[in-house]
Image 1 (tube, one colour):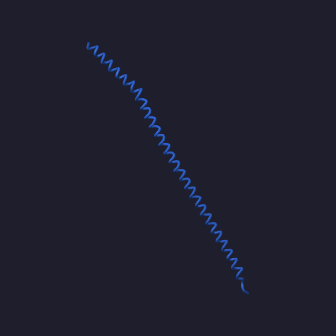
Image 2 (cartoon, helix red, strand yellow):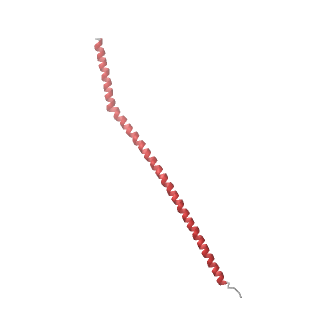
Length: 105
């Protein structure tokens, strides 16, 4: 009789273990898979966000550099225009002075 009781207890323990294993495969495995997918999607989203932020920073730096070059070109152009205008003004004033004050004999 004790052998029968041990066999019954063994079968019950084995059945509980198998039911637990089946329950884990059916219920817990999809849950863990869902959690893993969510973690992966969050990680990928953060990586894309970081890549986008780096891209925006690079583009802003390029645009700032371009704007600085354009500003230097405008300033150089204005300075050249000023010097051209000033030299033209000086030539006109010299001509005007020469025409106004003829040499005396």
